[in-house]
Figure 1 (spheres, rainbow, N blue to C red):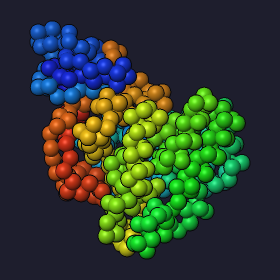
Figure 2 (figure 1 turned 135 degrees about the vertical axis):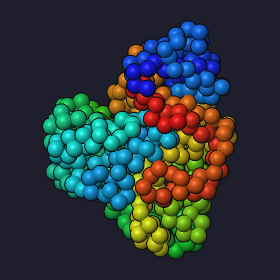
Figure 3 (figure 1 turned 45 degrees about the vertical axis):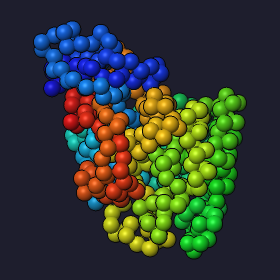
Figure 4 (figure 1 turned 90 degrees about the vertical axis):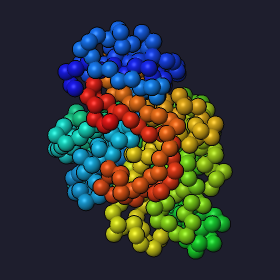
Amino acid sequence: MQNQPLALINARLIDPAAGTETRGGVFIEDGVIRDAGARVTKAEVGSRTLVVDCGGDVVCPGLIDMRVFVGEPGAEHRETIATVSAAAAAGGVTTIVALPDTSPPVDDPAVVDFLLRRARDTARVRVLPSAAITKGLRGLEIAEIGLLREAGAIAFTDGFKSIRNAQVMRRALTYARDFDALIIHYAEDADLAGTGVMNAGELATRLGLGGIPAEAESIMLDRDLRLAGMTGARYHAALVSTRQGLAALAASKAAGLPVTCGVSINHLTLNENDIGDYRTFFKLAPPLRGEDERLALVEALASGLIDVIVSDHNPQDVDTKRLPFGEAEAGAIGLETMLAAGLRLVHAGHVPLPRLLAAMTTGPADILRLPQGRLAAGAPADIIRFDPDEPFLVDPAKLHSRSKNTPFDEARLQGRVKLTVVAGEVVWE
């Protein structure tokens, strides 16, 4: 397959970068897109080409997920690069950004090199390591951003931890600005969140669980945005889940600051009521919010205020999930269900399909400055084919992730990925 040209014909082509939707095909050769559009037909591509008739299915750029826990090194019981990349390929995700929350953490160039080598040897999709902002993810001493970037780190984040000290955050942003590096931060005031385990409000009170107020996010995010304005650094809010956070981001963008934000597919499609009778697969960080907050996020996605959708793929094993809600670890897997869950918004008429795909392809590609995420001649041939209407039942036993903690367990979804191509090679069919 690697040396044979490939043509996907009779497809519904969606190019999120151009905002276009046409009928036609994509011609792939030597790992890049040679042509795309109505000109690509079986008669035009030549006899050497492997031709796939898509039968009207959607063909678009492969998805790019900016927030994925890969397990290696140190947590192979939860996930490995091999299993996470298999899950990504099955879900139409062709590029993942690996979080640095490993053991040891990705705060040394040698660990970046290890991840790149492991990905080269075992991954089906592109794996781009992010590195720690602070040494040991402790929020105290800034890591060697310059050396880590030179080693291959695509961005800098402390993963699931927030940097409490504003002076440390200011110095990190200044340091990153000098290397034109991207800072991705999980904004939550740990002191205000305290021992909370779900969204603060009436439901938390009725369930007898500690609540995390929306202000825990907005106060930290407001601080970060002010520091980004002070330093001029590129800043990306990893996960926004509240209207207060959206308001702060809208103001910063209107002021011309180089800031962007992401949202978890879980917070776009689920709310705090899904927790039901203490269902720990719905324990997430940040916590699932109320339905009014979810609708505000959907509206912000449709308007373009939210730049990126992520799976927030965080595998947890049985020992850490099947516990009382207050003791269970937060997190859910999501690589294989991100696209289908997002299509719920399309089928409900809340978000057009090109806009949804833009937040999963062009948006992250532009922020990370990657050539992927577009259907244009010369672009890397990272392509997926999917039927947006094909229904299926989520069976955790059939998911490729090593852990099975999906909040969509036995959910009825629409949108099955039929083909995933990375650099011209079919990695899932």
